[in-house]
Amino acid sequence: AAQMATANGNTREPSQSVELSALEGGEGPQLMQQQQMDVSQAEADLHSAIVDEYTNEIGTMANDIAALQRAMGDIREHASAQGVTLTSIEGEMETTAQTTGGATEQLTQASRHHRTGTKMLYWLLLLAA
Image (cartoon, rainbow, N blue to C red; front, side, top):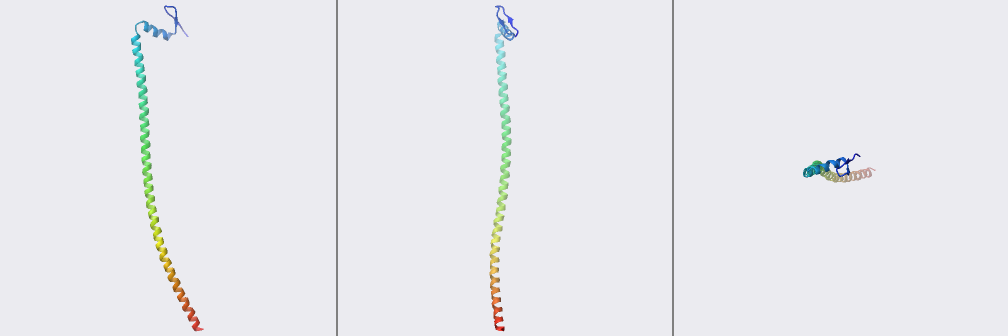
């Protein structure tokens, strides 16, 4: 590393030399003011980056909420359609139960009629014999 000699014989790094020579030349307050401006700009840049990130996260969250709302709407429609289907199935089951009851009654009547006919046939065969 290159070193520079000072008036009192000490050696310094070149960057130290520039800063120290600026301080020795009466530019100390200006240098400090410049450093404060640099820090202020760095803080402003940092805050700007934080705001940008926060804005992006809010945008992502808004998109996620919109997607969730669409999904909930789809679920609501699906549940409604299933309700209609269940109501239809319930109605069909009720109709089937009524039809089965009517068929049972018809089978009972047919069985009685068949027994009556069979008895009459036996009587006729008995009388003919």
